[in-house]
Length: 209
Image (cartoon, rainbow, N blue to C red; front, top):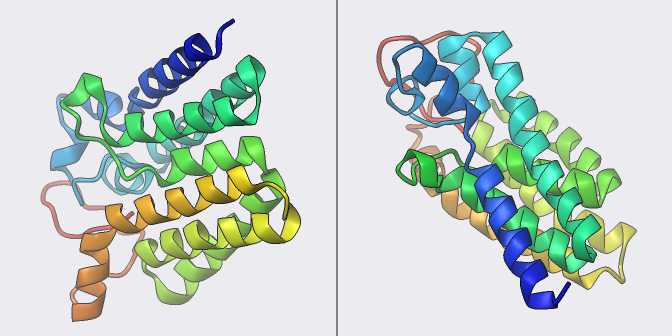
């Protein structure tokens, strides 16, 4: 298969798979829109708080899975470069879904799925750092940025010759930082609510990753 066709197929499959936002679809089955509930974010944490832990678990499994599946398909199709393209397209699809007015989530879980498929050791260490950061600060955004910026550094340490994955990690960290810019502004101003397991069902009261 010509390289141009490989790139087109990988980008298309990755984006269209990533754009299947289960958070939006599950809330839609209840006649609601997750983007108008809780924090307004179409991600697993908002689903868990507004629709229950079971729904949140289903959503995070799908968000991670679609990132991993896209990257693995790209790897099978044409190697690491194609896998990175497919994975990046899946993240963009999640954040800007064609099917849902280009308003999706922030991409953290999908990006995690991509890196798990490509470099699981660094990804799992980054996950532990995410958990430690969230537990210690109670800010989901801090956890996202700690994990996002830790990943390329971990790849540098564990796979120093894998420049392509390092560049991908840096690009992903920059993108996650941009997606959480509002959270960062509120943290600096002391206005960011801390993460809680409390369930909010009727009004937008907080922001999270």
